[in-house]
Image 1 (cartoon, rainbow, N blue to C red):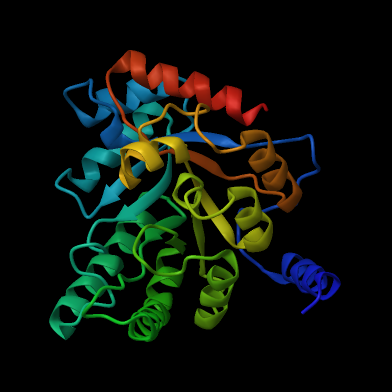
Image 2 (cartoon, rainbow, N blue to C red):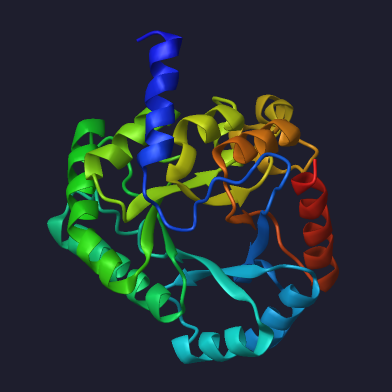
Length: 295
């Protein structure tokens, strides 16, 4: 496939993919909203206090992990009192009980966890549930992970539709879906407007360039995780140490990423997924994200 043909296919996909809340904004009119995971706020004794701290720091939304020990009605009260939106919900069962697990019982428990996450997200008015679709390891080959997870995600589509909440597949270090072209193929294999992508910027830096993923995934992107990565720390201290870098001080080219997001018309959330802390830390992250988003 030559470049002209590929660009033509990409343009057609941009025009045809019918995901909600993904509009075609003009370049220069960036409308990114800021969010942070609730667990990153270390101050505040109650859920409401944490929501209020996050709101006061300048965030528009909060990301939640569900199912979770915090009662749903407590979250609903905090949402209504603070004015924060629920930017995203992360399914908490997808690592321990992945949809690709060797044991069918474990797979089914993971599937039930996804159903519950979708149901709770729907009740919270959230439109995106983050899902790690599977994990490749010595016991679960790549092709088996693909087949099992695609089948399970297809099976979850009616529950997503019922909850009015999309399933957003995330790119993580799970030895699975390690290129943007494959990410597109995965979404197309599921074949539903209720399934898209949760793009994690920092996760791809060790083996690629985030702005390329953005352009190729296009309107399939439903949410974006904001974090940086240092290849130098990776090389000198170890792979995971690459994340031990402040936002804006690693190897992510933020102007290039922002330009790519503009080009695809992304108007959703940028959700911080970095080291949290006290109220001052939350405020710092809000300010730093505003700087990066304006770049």
